[in-house]
Image (cartoon, rainbow, N blue to C red; front, side, top):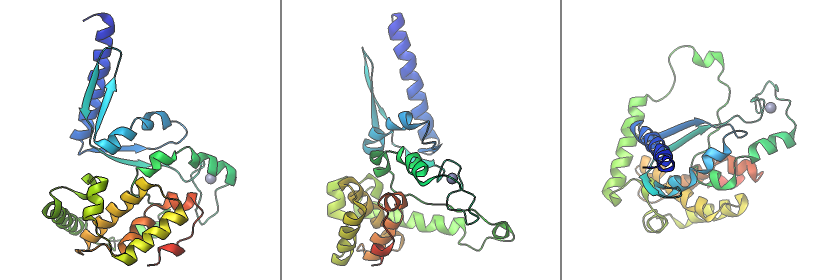
Length: 240
Ligand SMILES: [Zn+2]
C-alpha cells in the first residue's frame, strides 16, 4: 500500500471506529449542537439519518458502513442562552436570534422528529421526591409499544419507509385533516409529513390505540416546536 492509500486507510479506520462507537453506545449519537460551529460536521449526518448507512468515497476506494444511529442534539435558544427566561435576562436582538437559529438548516431540521424546549428548572422543583411517573414504569410502556410495532409490521415505526407509513400508519379522517392544516400553516415538507405520521403512530402505540387519531397527530406536530417557531404559527391549529 503506497503512502496515499495508507493515508486513506487511516481515514476509513477512523470513520469505522467512530461509527462502531456510536453503535456500541446504544446507537445514540449525542451532541451539544452549536449552530455557529458544527454545521459542516452535521451536514454529513443527512445520509445516514435517512438511509441507516453511509458511503465514504476517496480517490481510490469506496466503502459502505452501517450507520443506524439516533441523533440527540441540544442547542441554546439564542446566542446568550437566556431567551424565554421569565426573568428577562436575554438582551439578544430578534434579528440576531433569527440568524443564530437559521444556521440549523431546514433539511437537517426536517430529519429531526422531536423538538422539545426545556425551560429553567426552579430550585423548589428539585427539592423532595419527583412528582412524576417512574422511569421503570415509562420503560414498561415503551417496551409494550415497541412489542405492538413488532407484532404489526416486524420492525419499529422508525424503520418504516414512506410506502409503509402510508399503508400502516392509518389515520382517521379527522386526524388527516388536522395534519393537512398543519402542513399548510407550518409549510411542512413531504418528508416532515411522513415523519409526523410516524411519530403519531408511535404516540398511538404508546396509548394502545389502533387508529391514529387527531390528538396523536396534534401531539406529534406540537413536538416540532422549531417548525412552529419558524413559521410564527400559534398552537391554534393543533386543537383537534
Ligand atoms: Zn439571548
